Each structure stands twice: as C-alpha cells, then as structure tokens.
Picture 1 (cartoon, helix red, strand yellow):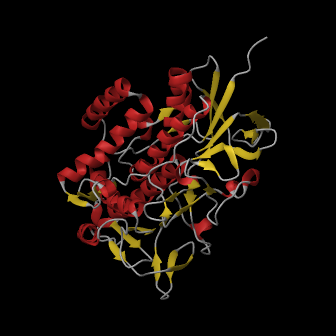
Picture 2: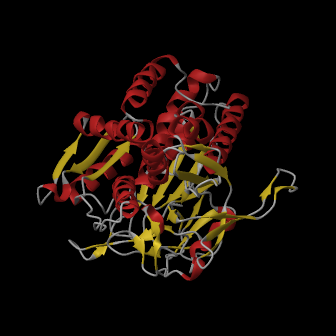
Picture 3: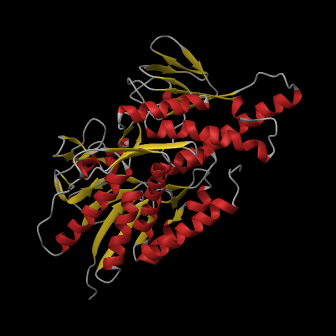
Length: 438
C-alpha cells in the first residue's frame, strides 16, 4: 500500500509564496511530501516592478518567472486556479472553476486536500469606498493591469504626437492623475517622465516629456510617510522639478470618467487615472473558512504566523495582520516583510514536521527605499537593526534599491541560477530597447 504523502499547499505565488514553495520543494521534494503551489496567474513578476511595467520601461516577458518550469526545477507542483473557499473540517480548499477567454469552463470547481495550508495571496488596492474609483481608475495589482495601463498610455501618447504633427501649435497633452503618495504612486509618476523622454527615439519624434501632465494626489500632509521628512521633501522636490504637480492634504471624494474630484471641489481632469492609495486583503478572505479577519480582510495570525483559530493554516505577506511586539502595530505590507515571513513559515513547517515547538516571527525593519526612476533614489536603511535609521540618497541608495531585486532573484531561484540571471539582466539593460512599445 502506498504511503499517504504529507500535503503542504501554498496559495499565492507572490514574493513570499514562491520563495516558500522553492524552499519546501528543495528540502522535501516528492518522496514523502507533496508541495503544491496554487496561483491564478501562469507567471510571476516581482510586484515592486509593476510601475516600470506600466510605464513601459521594463519588459515583463524578460523578467517574469514561469511557474511550471520553476516547479519542475524545485520539486513542487503548480496548480493554476483561484481560491474560492476553505473547508477546515475536511481540510480541503476549493478552487473556483477555470474559464477560457470566451467564458467556457475548462476545469470545474474542485477541492484540494491539505495537511498544512499557507495563505500568501497578497493584497488588492483599497479604494476606501470612494465613489467612481472602480469604474474610472486603473490599479497596479498585477501584470495584466500594468500592461493595460501601458497600452492606454502609449495610445494617448500617439494621439498627442499625431495632433502635433498635423498642427505644431497644438496644445494637446497626455494628462495622468495618480492618487496615493506612497512608494507606488511616487515611483510611477517619475517613471512616466523617464518613458516619455525616450519615446522620441521610437517613432514619436514630435513627442517629449513636456507633453506629459502628471498630478500626484495625497490625502496626508506629505508624500512618502514611511520615510524621514527630509527625504520625503527631497523626493517631492525632485518630482516637482520633473514637472509633477504634487497635491498634499488633498482628499479625493469622487472619480468621474473625466476627472478626480477633491474635497475642495477641484476637478483634476485627466485621461488616465491610477489609484494607489492603499491596500487590503481580497474580499474572498473575509472570514474564509470561519477564520478571523480584520476590517481590511486580512487574516489574524499568532506570533508563529499560524491563524488564530487553526494551527494547520498559516498566513504570510500582505494578506495577514501580524502585530509587531516591538511597535505594537501591524507589520507593514512590504516585500521585505513577505520575504522574512516566508523564511519564518518555512522553519516553522519544518519544526511542525519534526514535532518540535514553533518559534515566533520577528520582523526586522531594514528601512525603505523609493526609486524616482533614473533621476534619483532616496530612502532610509538599517531600521531597527541599530535602533535607528540612516538616511541615504543618490548612487548608494540606487545601488541598494537594485540589490533588493537581486536578493529576490536569489531567494526564488537559489544562488547559482540567481546570480546567472543577475548577470543576464545586466547584459539585457545594455542591449535591449529602453521601452516596451507592444
């Protein structure tokens, strides 16, 4: 009789989920354990790069990771699908029907059993119930949404370029409004100017960054609240030098198909509107399987990252709410937190397999970095490692920022392949086009 394998299921192939699948697959393989990764996309791209994909300055086809080839290399199984529900009594998760582009059903709704379950489904953009956001704003939660923004951006750039060719005195502009002065909003606005400056070399000879009008809207008193005030001010100054109109202390009350409407009554007219004002858990997570969640649909977890009502279910990354004992506040939704949580869950699963006590997760804040495209990089390093922060900007900050992605490559590919991809990536930046225009 074949021995029943211990089945560990990971839902979500983002930075944390993919790293965890690799490490579990490398340790256990397929002899006595069955490691399964469930993900609704066929490929992975590091979420902090989506603003570059949206602006066209990064070709996701060259940087994405195919789950099927990755799982073959590292000894886990990949299932394409979307989590629908969890039956904790039967230890099963249900996968929603897989539909073709025409809406026809390819794979029916089906269950997957688990002995241990890890939820790492990430987050979605939080519109805070603001009227018109869902209908009239784009978000950058995944590759498909970033591609959609890029296509619309290029279409409007072409429109303006054509208008200028017909009438050189034309006052046509591409108007973009970005709501949210966090890292995503700031990095996207800067990257837009980088892309606009390069378009003249790719067939739009009459178009340049002067034809781009970008407004960044932030409800708080300043942009980049995670950074020291001095660095945030430096970043705002850099954006304004590029031509970005930065509005702080400005609350959005409504979004129409033509403009962003603020609490003061101002209408920020724009063809392209992006909402990047916060994140929350997907609606599917709201008390899924009877588990405890907070108002933002994030799963409540113990210090060991086990969910509060079920020790066989772990959660990591943006989809969980983990209180940091050092601050008394939830661990912030950052890539570094997802990476650290993946490491903690990996070690705790190994301990669980060996009937050893689990250890609590300890978050180490290594600081924050924000890239203002090729123009500048600002941030703070060290975090609570030395009990304080070290402000950095310029070339050092840019080097560390780039190193974060390189560390991610090593985390999901291992040292040998990761270093190889870093070298290839460096060559690609020299030989491939500056923009992806298709």
